[in-house]
Image 1 (cartoon, rainbow, N blue to C red):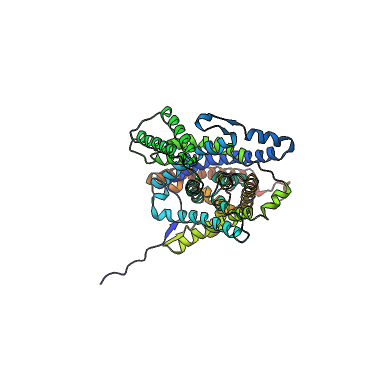
Image 2 (image 1 turned 90 degrees about the vertical axis):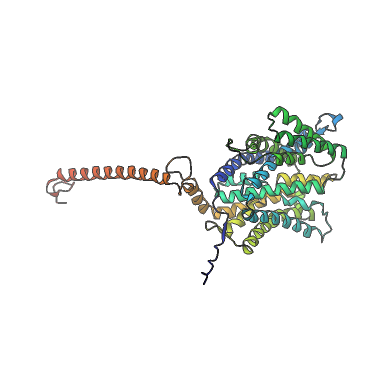
Amino acid sequence: MTAPRTPMSPRKVLGRLSLRERTFVADALRTETVGGVLLLIAAVTALAWANIPALHHSYETVSHLHFGPGALGLHLSLAHWAADGLLAVFFFVAGIELKRELVAGDLRDPKAAVLPMAAALCGMAVPALVYLLTNLPGRGSLQGWAVPTATDIAFALAVLAVIGTALPSALRAFLLTLAVVDDLFAILIIAIFFTDRLDFAALGGAATGLVVFWLLLRRGVRGWYVYVPLAVAVWALMYNSGVHATIAGVAMGLMLRCTTREDEERSPGEHIEHLVRPLSAGLAVPLFALFSAGVSLSGGALGDVFTRSETLGVVLGLVVGKTLGIFGGAWLTVRFTRASLSDDLAWADIFAVASLAGIGFTVSLLIGELAFDGDAVLTDEVKAAVLTGSLIAAVCATVLLKIRNAKYRRLWEEEERDEDLDGIPDVYAQDDPAYHLRMAEIHERKAAEHRRIAAERAAAARHGLAEVPGGAGEEGDRPA
């Protein structure tokens, strides 16, 4: 007679990260948080510069200042350089992030990847659907369906830094994965839906450059003086091909090796990402925001955000679509698989992070410019809608996260506690006998110190009683 089969316990999702993954996420998000603060400063500066009457003309003049080699088709405005040039650096980092997640991070395990992938995809599909449903009845332009699909990780982390919320590492990693998947599909959307002309000679040249880039990497050739000029050439050819130039950045990022070998502490991809991420987060993205977020915010323009179907669709897509899409994708994944939510978290936490993902600043602005290219008025109105929707999402997320902040603080402190001072949080050392021996020594020293203090206090008490004969009190000679 066979023994009854023991039912498998459901797999927990969004549990504690591995130490290596936690370290990577912490390092990446630390840089993005600083970049997010700079992004906020750049956005506020752009709005002030564009809306103060005495400064408005200078903002337009600087934004439309052209420079670059015209013979190579690169005589571009400063705003154009920021959108097509600097954002290529941003997407290069995004490509490395995605490659690492797929080969060395949590996404390499299909079981672990199901929930964040499903949440991210639903978090893009539902905002697009909300935009379409908002615009179909009023016959608004459907070109902006992709605007509310993106999440701005730097802006979201800046909000967390401003409101002082310490999210546990699992939720931070979930937010980072959402943004990485968003960036990948955003670049695919740009490549597929916003390419209206193709120069096959330039495209072939760009493809050849990418092949050379890949071969050099596989042969182990090193030296920035080899790769930087090649990367610039690939970018220029991609720009002239008609495909958005940022595609070159993400393609080169995906080519880097992100697995470690025996003699390596970290892979070449992680090393390059560590070097380039500060440039992306601290310079490229803030400068793009400076020349893209400067839209006029008159009372009439802000009123149009909620009355014009295109702009209302963007706001609702970011605030409602993102939240419901991400939360719904996560809930459906758990509902129809053998997974269950980590015991440390509740569905309210997923809903709060989903609302935070409604901050869609950088890539949303870029897609807005591409979707309504040629209509300057509508482009500015859509940008105002992105700013408005991101602000509303930030406020909603702040309220929801603050309600849960005491719990987040306790989880964060537990993850960070390192009583044996070995540089590794204690929760990751529970299976190490050496850790328990170190803790035993620490507790023995503390116990010895407490015994010494107790003995001193007892001796002091006996000495005090000996100096007061007959149990006299302190006031005169009356009995105590």
